[in-house]
Amino acid sequence: MQKTKNGKNYTNLAIEQKENSEIEIKAEIPENILSEYRERVIKDFSKDIELKGFRKGHIPKSILMDKIGEQTIIEKQASLALADIYPNIVMDNNLNVIGKPEVIVTKLAPKNPVGFTIKTAIMPEIKLSDYKKIARSVILDKTEANVSEKEMDDVIEQIKKGAAINKSKKNNLEENLKKNGEQYEKLELTDDFVKTLGDFKDLADFKNKIKENLTKEKSIKKREKRRAEIIEKIIKDTKIDIPKIFVESELDKMLAQFKDDVARMNVQFNKYLEKIKKTENELRNEWKNDAEKRAKIQLSLNEIAKKENVSVSEENVKHEVNHILEHYKDAKPESVRVYIETVLTNEKVFQFLENQE
Image 1 (cartoon, rainbow, N blue to C red):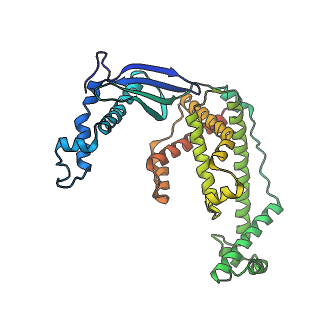
Image 2 (cartoon, rainbow, N blue to C red; image 1 turned 135 degrees about the vertical axis):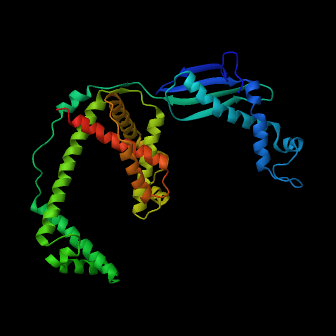
């Protein structure tokens, strides 16, 4: 590819800093650089266009040009050139860009430079609070989790109720909830009955395992409560100019999760919106503060991981990615990988913070 006198494939570059760590890039593609893409564009169109009397790929150039039009060719040339030039601008100016750029062609005419504006965001400067000191200040409740008899009874009742419903389904007795209730009332906890529910030796083993699970759940809740307190205090005094792209990304995730929750209730999302009398945009506006907070938390965790050289092994990442892809065949591997790396790294960061005794 040809270069201009300064060794670049673009001219008249201007980069302006905007709010929320966003930047606006303005530049031009010289006509001699743009012309290098012309034959490639014509060749690509020739492969796809069908014209009566000619074989695909063998349409004479003059006829093909009349069919496509000069403006369409220039637009495609500009598109291909920009795809090559944008990474060069990023590297030449050491821009730590994030997200998908918004590209606007501002000037496009035959035998003239192409003017363009690119709006994007850069990784914001993050001024972390004293996260180690904060982590040490949040004391873990080390008292042993206590499981009450009522909590045990409630879980057992739910298990009995679920077993009664499943039994009704097998026997095709789904006429009404009353029969399910009758089945539920008649169920008695015996050694033989609990063996049908899972890998239990007897009734005593069944109750012990329920207690173990409830104790474990309570311990996890204690840990999660401490982690939430730690990160809340960390982000309180952390300074970040959060790019809109991060907030929008979090809103996308929140909306996707919400749609999944609604779908699990066997309700169409549009019908649900009609029922609550809200639009998708109204929901996003309501969630904006939460999305900003989630973005700030993730950016803070990323920065701590960077400062403390926290990383996860490739072996662990691949293992978890493969596990998810086995169950979700349509998932995009690259998206799953980003998700897994984030989850595993966050876990290691929290473990690091918890060990600041």
